[in-house]
Length: 245
Length: 245
DNA sequence: GCCGGTTTTTAACGATCGGTAAGATCTCTT
DNA sequence: AAGAGATCTTACCGATCGTTAAAAACCGGC
Image (tube, rainbow over all chains, first blue to last red; front, side, top):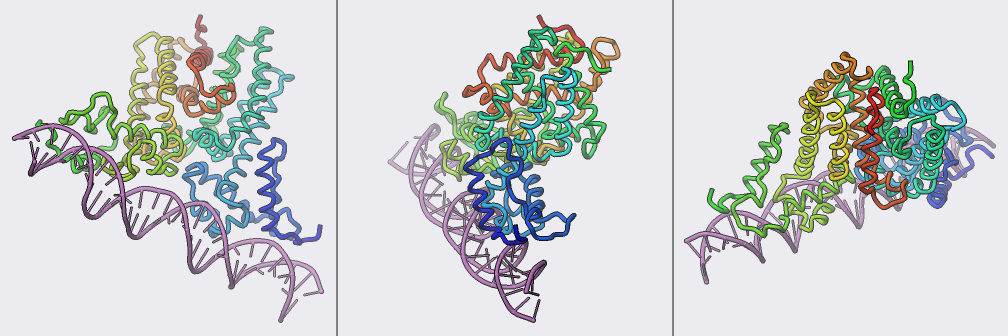
C-alpha cells in the first residue's frame, strides 16, 4: 500500500455507510482506519485530529446525550473548526455511534471474560474490579451508555437483543448451576447482574454526586477501592459466600 | 379570596422569581399555586393544562435531559401550543427546575424516613421497597435526576451540598453505630448507600434495558418484586444479617 | 519550487431552537 | 348581554442548530 494514496474523505464516507449496514458486530473492535494508521509519516506521539474529536465527543455526548450535544461544543473541545468534524464523520449520529460502539464492545468483552471455569470467588471479584476500573478510567463512555439507555436505547436496542441478552442468559445459567450445586445461595440471577451493573456503573455516572457528598472535587483511588470492597461484600454476602479477609 | 381575582400571568412570574431565590428548600412540597386551586370552577376530573405540561415535560426531560428536550416536544405531548408553556413557566429551565424539585423533595423525604429508631431490618427493607416503588411509579422523575447528575449536577449541586450531604452523613453515623454495636458487619457506610441508590434507581433509569433482556415490552409487577428481594438479599447478606424467609 | 493529495478553515445555508407580541377565545360575574 | 379576567393560539423574531460548498494551508515526492 503506497503511502498517502487514499482519497480519505471518500473512503471514510464509504466506511461509514458500510458500518451502518453491518450495525455493530461484537468482534470488529476498530474497523475505522485511523489517520495515524494510514501510510503517511506523522508525529508519533501527537494526537491526531480524529482522536481529539473522539475524545471531545466522548465528554460532550457523555454530559448531554445525543440530542443535547452540539457539534460546536465538540469542535471547541477538540480544538478544531466545526465543519472539520464532517471530514472524519458523516454526521453527528455517526460520531455518536462510533463512541457507542466503543462502550458496547468493552461492555461485551467484560461480560465475556466472566468465565465459569475459574474459581467462583475470583471470577466475581475480578469482574467487579474490572467494571469499577472501567468506570474510573472511562466515565464518559459509561455516561454515554447510560444516557442512551435512559432515552430508550434507540441506537443499541438491537445490539442488546442480539448480543447482550444471550450473554446475560449464559451467565444466568452459570449462576443457576452454582445455586443448584449448593455453591451459592439461591438468587434471581438476572437481577444479580442488573445490580452488579448498577452499582459499578454508578461510580461513573454518579461520580459527581458522590464526590459532592464526600466533599471533594473528584473521587480518588481510595474511593474506588472502597467501592470495590463494598460491592464485593454485598455480592458475596448476598450469595452466602464467606467475606473477604 | 374572591374567585378569579388574580392576574395569573403576573403572579406566576413573580412566584417563579421568588422560587429561584429561595432555591429549593426541602419542606416546600408544592409552592406553586396551581390553576385548579384558584377560585374559578373547573371540570373537576379533567386535568388542567399545567398538569398536562408537567407530565409531558417529565417524559421529555427524562428522555433527553435539559438540553436535549425541546419545548415543541413538550407542548406536543401536553396537547397545547408551544407558547402556552410560557403562560405557566418563565422558560424551559424554570419548567425543568420545577420537576427537579419534585424529584429532590421525594428523594429527601425518602431518606429522612430512614429512621434509626425502628428495627434495623425493617428500616432497611422498607427503604429499599420504597425506592423501588418510586422507580416503578415515577421512572421519568428518576431519569431526570439521573441525567442532571450525569451532566454534572449544575442545577442541584448546591441542594446536594446543603441538604443531601448532611442527610447522608447522619445515616452514615447510624450505620457506624450499628457496626460498633455489633449489629452489622463493618462496611463503608457511604458506599453502602451509594450502592442502594444505584440498584434501586437502576430499575427506573435502565428499565428499558432490563425489559429488553427479559424479552418483554416493560417490567411487570413481578419484576419489581424480584428486584426488591434481590437488593434486600444483597444488602442483608453484605451486612451479615440473616436472610429473609 | 511546483504539484497531487490530505487536512483544515471561512462563509454561509435552511431548519429548528427558545422565546415574544398581540390578540382571539373562554369563563364567570353582574 | 356586556364586561373583566383568565386561558390559549397564531404569527413571528433572532439565535443557534447540523450541515454543505468552496477554497486555503499543509505535506510529501519529484
